[in-house]
Length: 273
Image (tube, rainbow, N blue to C red; front, side, top):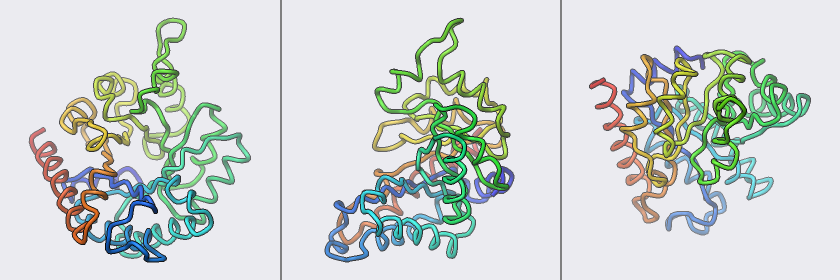
């Protein structure tokens, strides 16, 4: 999926919602407890309930890797299910990979050729050769960590370099030369909304993947105010606030309710801007 296609889906649904599929195998709703295939059934129910309100899904690989071999199967089947039933959805593998060039090339082949996701989150610490192999696949995206929402982001990302430039700003300025607005987007935590205006000065046309709205306390209104561009340029992720809105029999319906609430807020922001 290219940038134009992604923007068309945002316009079509009046939504820039990304649903994080952080499905914890030890935190399944009551009707799925004891089900041998609980995580996949959970994902399927969540996707079916929220697809009309979302434009993207983001499975976090940690929640699948902890299950071992069967977890990889659940991840692959979840991607396959979305592809088959909701082909308009933009699928992000939240894997946070980042290694030397030949290793990154193998990761890229795994996620793009074998798993058929649209994008992979990447840590750029090791430089260009850890990211560029992901940019060799037409229609696929590298989602580079820039300024994250975790409290210890300040340990490195906000450090000032000689001349006053901060580390995350150097990441943006350097990495935007590796690819283009059609294959590179950046992770910016919603709790870092105060920095979004500055980020837009550096990467005005790139998409931003913004986690942290909902359970982590980020403000959707602030994210849109400071982070949106003329083509929206945002995918705002909510995970726990949607998928764990309930652990009872109504878990899918409650997930749909929470997704719809966010979609309605997004629609108002889009049409009032």
